[in-house]
Length: 382
Image (cartoon, rainbow, N blue to C red):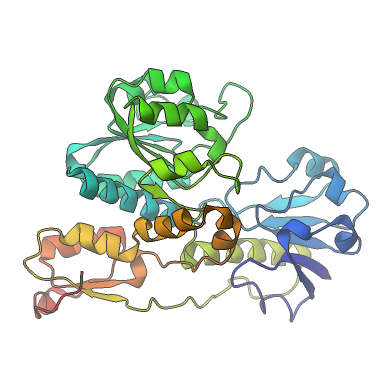
């Protein structure tokens, strides 16, 4: 068996070598010649899998270590009987972590309590559902918009876009990119969308860049329709709009899902599917060892008034990534390619908490000590 793999798929090297020949290549540079005698192709979003790449090759399986799969021509794969798999939900917690920290960053700059705000979540798949959970834990009122789910499940738990535009203080995008059809999301947030906003909002985009029309967003910011933004996905990546970059509080190079935990989930998913498809006789469940954070323990001062926000931003602060991109926007791809994956909440232990605080942070996923160890030290690091 021969497998061609993107050399940037995390935690992959060494997993397959005992069972198959593996050739690692740059995802952007994989070409038809590389695949002529390959049985499987493991990729990220930078490899476009279409007729041009696949015609005349031996590829029978494509695994993309990503949630999205718009870089795969699924119709062509169906015709050619090529099995393809993605990793839905692999980085949902990481994206929700990013959104949560973005909201807290807004609250610090603009001096508001998230529990007093209403958030609209557009697209309530696995990422949107995790965002819903975390924002409810922050005490926010949450409104959900997902037309496909509303049609399939009933409209009881969902609201229309007009309500989002009328009632929400924060809007976050998590839909699949659809370029045509009744559920089109391409340029969903266009001039008309912003014109219908009934009050100024904060906007977060961690879905796809082209869901938000860049010029319309810039005008909405100038007109006061949008107070501020957290932009992780950009139109025309990596050639991002420099004016928008400078105008927003949070600007990152498409890394909202870049946690070690999420990347491991994606790699594990596609390797386990590949194992079953090609009958490689690997163990059915893949175990991966993840790096430990440099400082996994946070000791918060017991009298701190902002323990929950401090813990959440300690685990991930998007302002630090923003500073890197704003300093060198032309290095978008390089920054993204060399990004050091963060860990999710479960990798951190927080001490000096009241039991109610510990319970809330455990709901986010943090480790906290048992009651007998609570408030046993005045040391802190914030």
